[in-house]
Image (cartoon, rainbow, N blue to C red; front, side):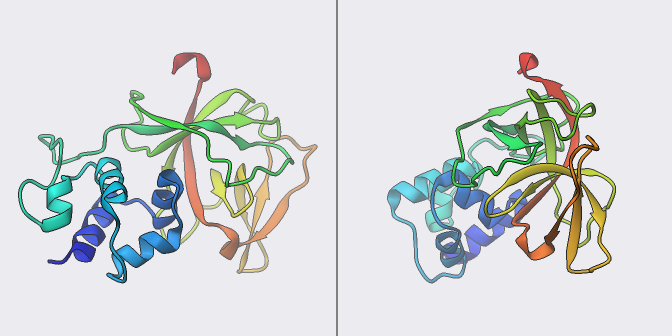
Length: 208
């Protein structure tokens, strides 16, 4: 198995998107795609960052030799925790640039072991359900359909927003609706969505 096939395998097992890896490592999505397609190989620094990010042995990723996981657990799950981003997702009308990533730390939150990320809420469009300053806990939505009526974290090129997703009369669009009725619904193309996370719960910032 070549490097590109090993990388494809471990990324598939992690269930993480190219976009998210690229965003967290500060490289382009096309770079990750080229690695997976065998068009290019990462330098030593990027390879080390990749191995740390997906918790896989540097040596195994490079050569296929030795143990695959750095910290294998009894259940075979090498997920280290929920990735808590110290930036904000917008629950309002202001745009939030996806280039402003902010930092992150891995945390463990009891009762949410199946979730992937946590992020701060900013704005009041989802009040009283979600308040500015809350931290939402999300699971990446990997289905090929949308379970309408739930609250999602929606990542587009220019925004991170927290909204209810509702069905649009246009099958190529979705309606992003707020809890606060003073905010009008927003309709966007499905193709605009880079990543989608279903909100599984929230906690106060004081508890992290």
